[in-house]
Length: 275
View 1: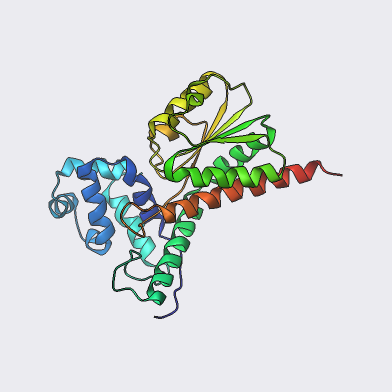
View 2 (view 1 turned 120 degrees about the horizontal axis):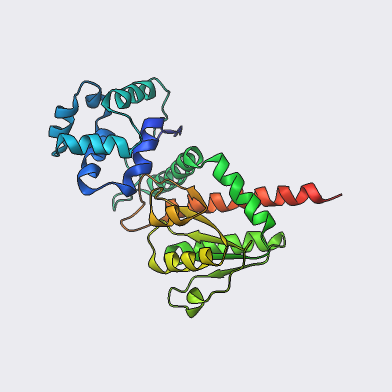
């Protein structure tokens, strides 16, 4: 298997993939079509895109707006610009199969992780990351919420931040009565982790924390999720594919990288105070 050179996605593709979690089923069909055949879109009009996607023209227009484009003309210009950028070469699929050799498994897994890291690097907003670092640095207390697969990311945060003296704890039990307790104070920080941004117990805890004046930072794969809208500061990760059906390994790698960026930022803030 040849060496793999990974580069970032063109901006138009990042926008489309970032919007995927908030699209309707019909709009998702348009997204899947343009991701599969961007060159075909360049020679198309609204009618032909709608026909190829099996949706109405109004759906195509709604998709473009949700993905952040003013219309098909601007979308096509973004695709054309992206086509002139040098692209790396990845395996056609990062999903594992029964026929994969050990080398193929290694390459697909490492490429999937690097792809998620590269994509997240591009969608993670500097201003949002800076606000989150400032809030954590000043917080008298930090509570991390991570349930199910997100619990491992929450534990990574606990391990890192306790090393630099932050008063922090983790809740990963969705049935804990603790999630319903009004224990937060103004200035406290909640770090809520949910790939979907729709985990019911997390949303309940976040609402309670907000009522008590806590500052909420979220890490989620869906920028237009309920959690992101509730949060004071949303840090978005992006993952194009999954290793296996239902697996979230690549997503977790990207989210842990965000935790490490927060940890490094707070550590540097603390260093500024030292003599």
